[in-house]
Image (cartoon, rainbow, N blue to C red; front, top):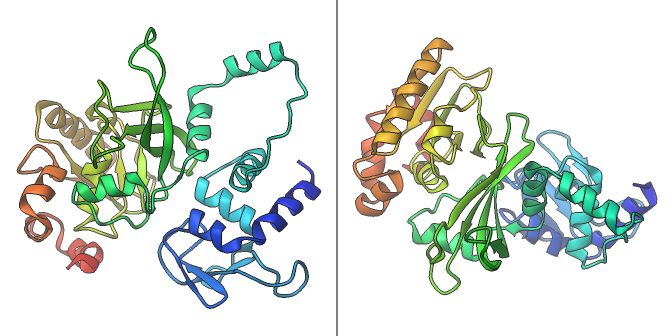
Length: 348
């Protein structure tokens, strides 16, 4: 991809820098001539600022950002790359073109070659494309769905996006349908998208779509998960996105991961720095088995494992039936005392 194409896209994005920020840095806000946010990955905060207007070139150009905390700097293409977690520059360009409603460049290959390339694309590639085609959840039906489930801790949710018309097929012989969907990026330890999870939503109610399997995953899932926060020495892992986000309501700064099923929870890969793991098991036989396997694996790796079990079927049920205050009180006495001060302070 030539530098001239990148420069032209960056220039066009800068002409409507505030719209770019509202789309990709949705956890920030405008103050004067700047958009303030925690970092280029849409973390809430104030250390990174994007200039919203200015000359097309030279000092004070619009669309440039600087992170005062880290010294990181760049333009709006860099913002798109970071928030969408795109590895290949051509994918960044494609996403920028979609935002600007520009036509994609015509393929130079013939139809047969294009079909061959399509058949060679793996499910992880499809997951990355789906995520790139979706938008941040702020103000969408995906956000409304989560809030209807009692989940209000929606910080550090760059791994979640919304697709207005996501394809769904009941089985191979059924016609393709389109439904709104919450799309969750499954990533490895490096942050690379290796899969995606779709929760199809009812367009008329704040609930899952009335279809046979409203949740499906694709890509390379084993060992990986949907991540909220950056894991270090302590993290929590559970099955569903809603389960994990329910615990984030009372442990707002603890890094967490949704493995998407009991089987995948038992097989998560441990970060090299991990010293304590909270296992957010579901209250069923599959959840019990997953927790037992994970405890054994953690002990073998010299990682302290603490199981947190819900009163109801899962922690989203607890949040819904008990309320956030009672759930917080129950969790407070079951985690290490030092973790109460470290991870629970913002929710107290």
